Image 1 (cartoon, rainbow, N blue to C red):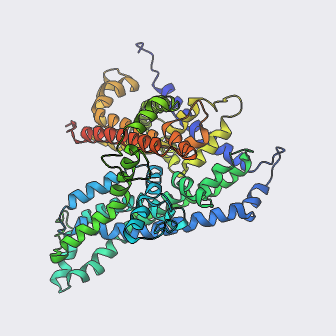
Image 2 (image 1 turned 45 degrees about the vertical axis):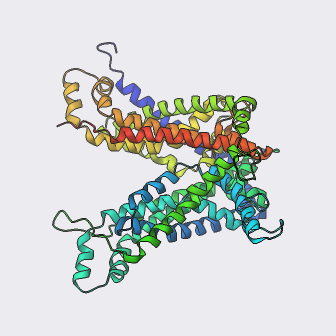
Image 3 (image 1 turned 90 degrees about the vertical axis):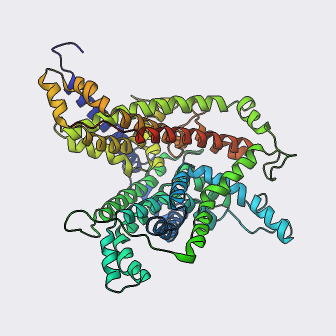
Length: 559
């Protein structure tokens, strides 16, 4: 940096302007187009159509039914499992917790594909096994994944871990003294759980229910894979269908607005639920909760937990491996049917694989680098109050949490298919989408890391003549090295998994891995789908493991 020239403020202002454009521009165009007729004039007809036309009303009602059902199922499954892991002497509790976290590695649309392999009415492996054991005719099916119930089940499989994490962490933090006092007053174990533990955990459980509702509300991949073949739409798949020929962007924009409003309201309700204090401890430290002895129920508890984990983890991965290495995807692989043909076909013969992998790695690397850098700058501005309006900047950095991926995709499509920035058909529009979607998590992670760096270190650098940017580069960034690298890894992983925005914004030249898997559904290349899905999960697992190792390393804290 040239001595005597301080570029800090122009750079910080440029970061603020870039963030405002990333968030405000697509949302602004979304609102404008939703209120615009085909002729270009102001109209409310798009919203009138949305709430009167059955082709829009039915998907909206279906989405609400799915979201409510998923929310209830996730709470019914995650709350008891979280209690068993956090508050009892159940064997393998740590392993169960790890496996629940591992289920989050699976992208939901990959899970939907795997369950399609397991429970399709005709070719599903579970249905074939049932016919073999029961002697039922070939046209009989025990499971039908192409149904509303099947879709609710699959979404629940990959949503309940979010609720489990909230509940288990809340139970871990709950003071043991409260339950000890109940026991001393003569209450039995189950009475204490009902009268003390459950009421204290209710705010967190409510927040978990809202998280599950929100996940189901905004999900695109699983409904697109299971609902469309079943003959019905959810709100996200209906929005996607409006971009098929002939495109109707004004109706897509109008359909996106209720989804955006619902998401904002749910996030606000979730924040209020998590902000409630279920208990207050006077007198400082409190003891860890005493594990509840299950007695003869210990083994049934483990079996129940493993059975639950079979739904998102064991059975789906067994189906993916079977399809990837079997000559016939719908047949169970054996010594005489195992083959590497699907692997060779996917990577050596399928012409779209290598371009998609190239685009995916290029976008993931660029998104992770730009997203981590942008999040670092914003976290610095907010944590150090480096410029006026830093609170607004912090709000904008977290605002994409309230924008569903498919809604952001619609907004970006509307914003960048016209001059002066006609970016549609290039990787740039996907880069903007991925960075915007992952910015809130990156900003929150680095914002927390800034608390480990005392401001006096930066003030000392400033007193010695360094600019803000030089201080950030030479003092703060090295101290945050582990957090920055971990943030980079998580953005990289999230970009590889992203489907909802990419499916709106891709073209034949900018197809990424997630979209390629989704497109192969139409051609029915089940073996290639399984190979690519396992490849995505393998890359995700490796990068997450690397990020966890970085987090596990001790980080220097200033005195």
